[in-house]
Length: 158
Image 1 (cartoon, rainbow, N blue to C red):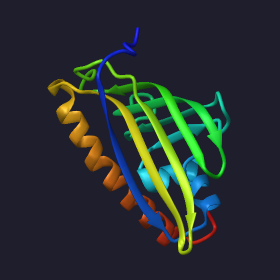
Image 2: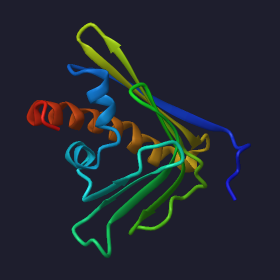
Image 3: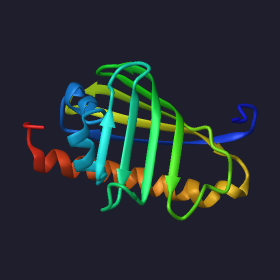
Image 4: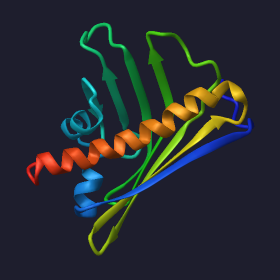
């Protein structure tokens, strides 16, 4: 059972993109787009409140390197997507801490396109999560760079 009373920390990352809020939001729940900007091997999304969001990495479909799945707690196109109730698997073993992540994506329009803000909460405040937290900070920077590259190369067809 997850400990909802533990002290946690969160990470926030925000960047602007030269695209419409609708297009930017669609990149968060369209499987082919997620594969393109996140490098996932397979993605399944049921884009609705109560739906699922799942991705795998690795060449072997029956034996992936990583799996991340979450419940879609809130689905409010084109402004807000909230993921919760994560399950996380890696071949290297379980995380060295209990997790209760909530990830919120917020899309806001501006004159030159739209901004995407991700707020990932639920990292334990203790040192047992420091390495994973640091990897996530780097991971979100890399992820946003992947979204920029995807938008540059995909044009408006995706």
